[in-house]
Length: 192
Image 1 (cartoon, rainbow, N blue to C red):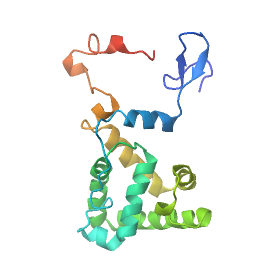
Image 2 (cartoon, rainbow, N blue to C red; image 1 turned 120 degrees about the vertical axis):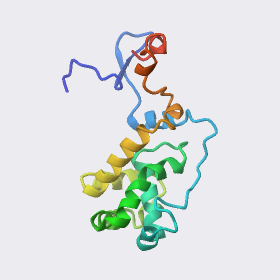
Image 3 (cartoon, rainbow, N blue to C red; image 1 turned 30 degrees about the vertical axis):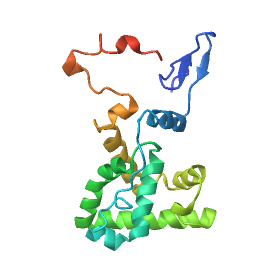
Image 4 (tube, rainbow, N blue to C red; image 1 turned 180 degrees about the vertical axis):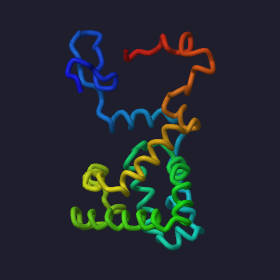
């Protein structure tokens, strides 16, 4: 990245000082944006990503199913976002895995690798690791794997492209159909 250019999300101007000051890190930003949700509470839908009665849930097992949900929440952590939104994103993958043996194997092997890595590092399975910081350390090890990238890609597109969730993050959605951003909040942007 060019050192002379400033990322809009990395720096802000202080009102009292003209020097640049660093903004929040990614986790803090995600945490704060998730707190915009009013009245949100954790609702577990079936205890995992697969429907509890599905063939895939029975085949993969309750522990692996719960591990996949915990993994999804740790990749894109929004503490006040309900589990149902993560499940909505991952359900198509779960349904595909029921019919696609390669995808199913990727998920099963990925969960085994995740748990094995957790046991090697902390002597407990992934879901039993108590702190987010320790779970993130395990995820950093698995980050280059196809399993991690598959889950991360599905979550990124599914969570941040879901219009139902946008208001929880303070995003009003696309404005071009409504005449653009002029007189629709563009002048209210305070971080530029």
